[in-house]
Amino acid sequence: MKQKGFFSRLAREHEKGQVLLHHPDVTPVAEKRLGQPMYNALMYPAENQVIHRLINRLRLVNGKASTQVHVAENGRFVAKLQELFREGNFPFFTTVSDLCVSFAVDITDAKREGSLYKAVFKAIRNQPKVYQFLTAVRSRLRVVLSVYNGDEHSIMKWSEFLSFPSGY
Image 1 (spheres, one colour):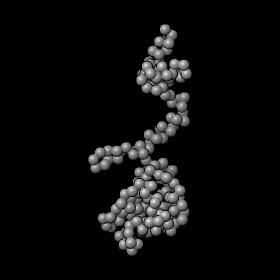
Image 2 (image 1 turned 90 degrees about the vertical axis):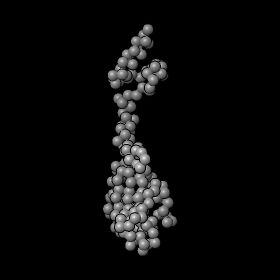
Image 3 (image 1 turned 135 degrees about the vertical axis):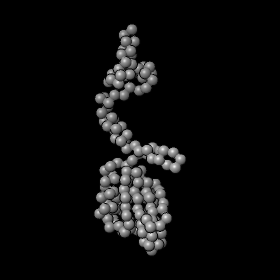
Image 4 (image 1 turned 180 degrees about the vertical axis):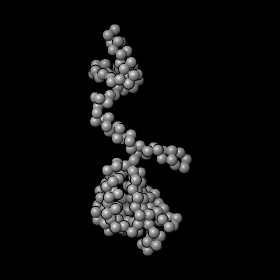
């Protein structure tokens, strides 16, 4: 009888969103009866902060056929990239957001270097600080290369982007 009262109270607290008690003897049974795991932000504050940080990074991106959920990049990483590109003296425009980094090159520069890729990656290799940082990090950012006064553009993943600076 006593356990039945415990589970009834546990279910009522769970439905009201109150703090759930954790007891090693009855937690598996309670989880089975409630139909979902017992989680409590007060008992797991570090995990709760991680969950909130991850939720804050979720973005809905409208595509041609559907809307997708993307995980945005960390704000400190984006700020560091913006700072590096601002300090570098690049012959093209750079834009960094939490979903992508974009390089917009003049068509004459792209033709002079032989391709859009060579124009961007040669300039990056000539900036050692930027080059070392980019090759040392991993990211979820998409990379967009485009000609701002033409119709050429390319979109790639970060891992694909990293393969070009070393041997474009």
